[in-house]
Length: 140
Image (cartoon, rainbow, N blue to C red; front, side, top):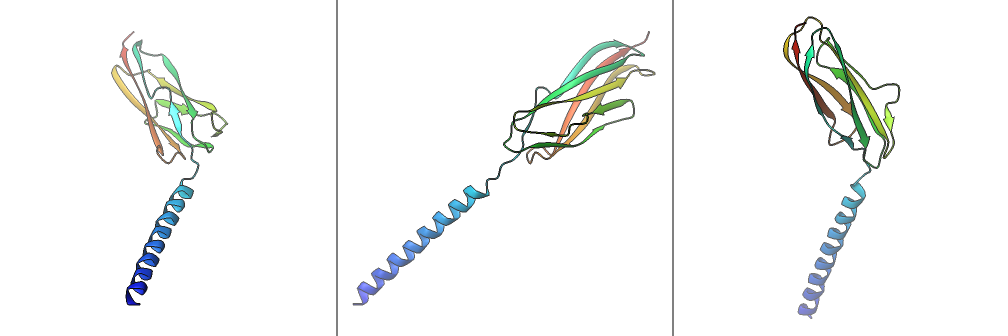
């Protein structure tokens, strides 16, 4: 009789353990929520050699490859000589594309210049994306 009861207890414990593991696995699958995913075609640009006094412009293109909407929360240039703009649209659905326009005033500068632009998003894997560009400014 005691062997039957112990066998029953072992089976019951194994059943409960299996049930618990299956429940945790299901919980993990449900926890995988939809998220946004920003993908830039490129994050670096080289203007090459440029004449001093020019205002350089470049457009960094991106796409939302996530399942949820992508939000551009902020775009910030590294210094006052650099401008960065996203435009009026700040939210992008799955598959939608957007642009970040970067400008750089070379007036009063010479030599190699390396500048960055910070893009803050709601992409959980890329909350802050750094864009960069370089150029070599030659005197007139």
